[in-house]
Length: 205
Image (cartoon, rainbow, N blue to C red; front, side, top):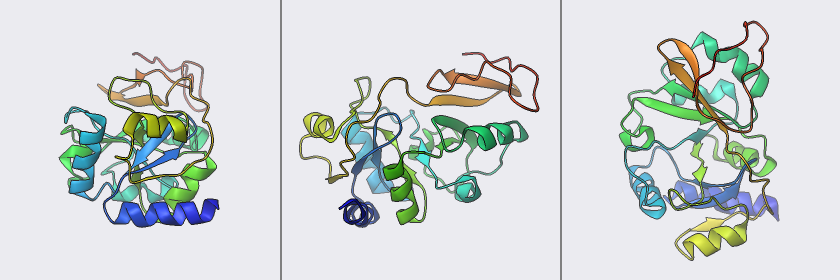
């Protein structure tokens, strides 16, 4: 059942559709990040401001090259320790990425999900997918397929029902600010403790 749902979801995403699917935090909305019209549809669905970037899921750290122009050395211990996991890292984006995806920022948020359905969907796609939360911007995200349908009615092309997600805090959002690792959004992973290879990190919010 799940395999057929994943295959159906992939087919819809490749055709420019929007698919809702479970992650380790909330349900996310997947489109092909290389499809400009699909990205516009995603923004309309969420009623999201165009300067707010959309994060992306990848299968593993070896598949990040299609999205980013550089991997900062400061990120490597975090990637090794917390991926897969609810940690989104903000990378310098490749110039080929849509400004819609990056929110016109020149950067892209990336993570690797440990949720089996999300991981299977990315693997079946064979390339990155968006994973912005399934909600109207500013409202609570969906934690179930029922929630997704309640929020969006029939405006979502397909929903992969993976049961309820844990909800709670979103992924922790980390980037570089003036060369310093910075927490831009607190989330499930607490990064105020010491990480191997580093002194205690001076994270700011």
